[in-house]
Figure 1 (tube, rainbow, N blue to C red):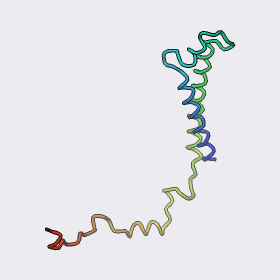
Figure 2: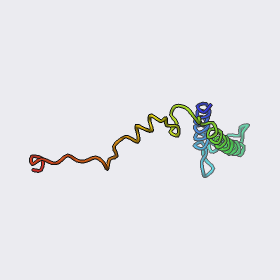
Figure 3: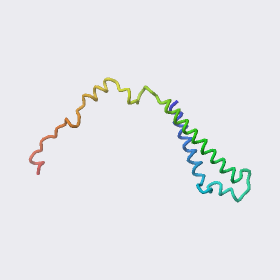
Figure 4: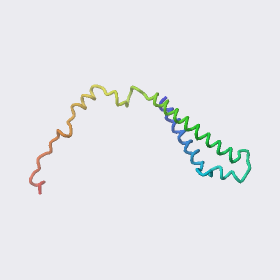
Length: 111
């Protein structure tokens, strides 16, 4: 479930990037290409559509992110919270870097 939601998040993010890149902050973008011709979708309707698409994709992206946070696997392989006792004991028995002693330098290395 988590992987499917992650894929949907990536798809919605890519679509949102495309919709935002089509727009222009000064009213150009896709709208400027359609301003000379009078088609079924007029200039104003194109900007309305792009604005509604941007808001819709933003809301869908936020909802998918919230759902994905709820569907994260709680137990299983790869979770850092559940460390088994053998691994914990191995970590506790390792030598800390401060306990490591440097070997004494010989006269040949000192020169």
